[in-house]
Image (cartoon, rainbow, N blue to C red; front, top):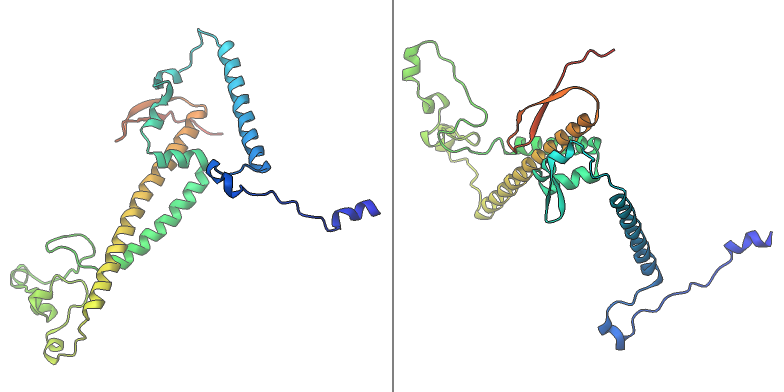
Length: 250
């Protein structure tokens, strides 16, 4: 009974001292926990080196596999064709995460892109641009098309026709009941718009990277499975595109 209660008895906490001021020029004083981590890392690297030496010693010089045709040596480092064409962000994502995580991140990023686009869709576009939503007006004949004037139809001034929002009518302009924004309000609005556009640009680039990572991970999974396949071309990065033979599933 007494032995089982020992672990509940208060114990003195033994603290390790830090580096004394006269030896601070020598750097951080290593603690025991630091040594344990360093020793574990050293032993793990030694085990890897031992395993590689054993493989090199027992290697068959006549050994061949098809991946040798798709890989090459550069400065003593193996470089694979598909991996070399990908960015570092995509490679790091493929090495540390699985397809489910990438799909989840794509869904989250896609929803944020839709939200940003819905916030920015009311912004003005350059004159003559056909991007974004349009306002279509239907008339009865070709003669009405030639005589059609947008300013008269919307009852506003010609200077406001290209606006997608805040298009006041002539009666409103004549009455003078228009709230004019101050300079600070305009600066804040411009700053917010620039930030939203930059965020949208970054989100679109991230969507492209996530889509590339997901397709590459699915392709690598398919390449490991059985089934007849052949190369049918190359994508914009110069990587092979495969097509699998149709098989009837039971």
